[in-house]
Image 1: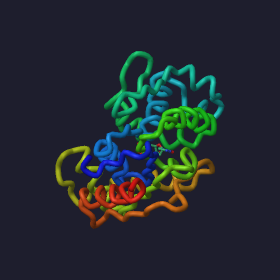
Image 2: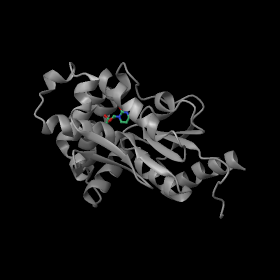
Image 3: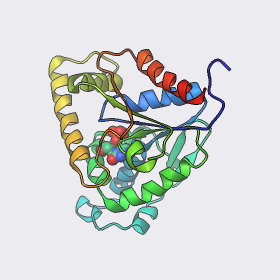
Length: 231
Ligand code: DC
């Protein structure tokens, strides 16, 4: 089967800072292996969107309980290739990437009740294996026994450039890159310095600096590890 592993239904984690290419890479690895992809950042974004939509002010977020969060109506449903997120009956997509959600999501991701509630949901999605999960704490907290852990890094400027290119489809100007780099740097600081599940390179992870790598090279490096594991 053209190098596709058939022996086990692996769990592969891909962590890294904002704009490091985790989601695009994890999605591609999942597609090549015929596995499901879990974008865990989208779960945090869905909760943030639900809180904003319900007009719950930020000053009240810290007091929310797991029951309050369950009551917001956010659901994760596994389909063949992805995990679809719903608010009530509405499938969520572009609304998860608005500037408001992007601005507020680090504050939501710091909350203990949020992390407790989402931990359970994420682990259930991994029960049957064959999963590529990307985020900040996939290898360190959610799936500490993952078969393969990857940690992606890239220079701040390169991450800012890629983010803008992805969002606008155009090569960004130097001043736009500088402004985006400052925003990413601020988000990285919140994600890395928070008390609960801070962003960190999990022990034993394959660390890849993708600043100078072509996309195909980074995907190839990860797939090579997968094949080594399953042969
Ligand atoms: O990867 P992203 O930009 O979609 O992540 C959105 C936010 O969620 C970001 O502030 C980090 C946080 N997050 C997290 O704390 N843990 C994860 N496993 C995934 C994302």
